[in-house]
Length: 107
Image 1: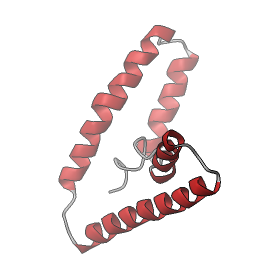
Image 2: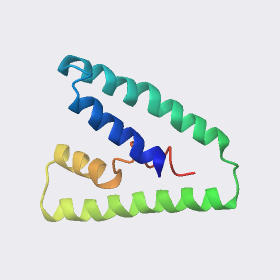
Image 3: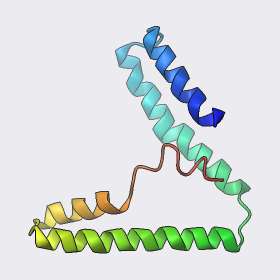
């Protein structure tokens, strides 16, 4: 729990005390999104021992993605979305924003 709460509280405190200027926020965000999170995901993935439980979780995740895309496709057809809007709707309906906490803290 501390691994999740501590970075959030630290970020709020740093912002509150003005440690970072507005221009520096983009640099920090890019560092986290393109460097720190991928490294954390690979590090965590490397430590996972491949077994039946991991395979079951992976299959369940893919099944939920396919289910969400199927439901989104049906809804898009009902609303007669354009081809461009259909592709966007399928993408945002099937993949949640799990990069922030989901993958690194899953195992």
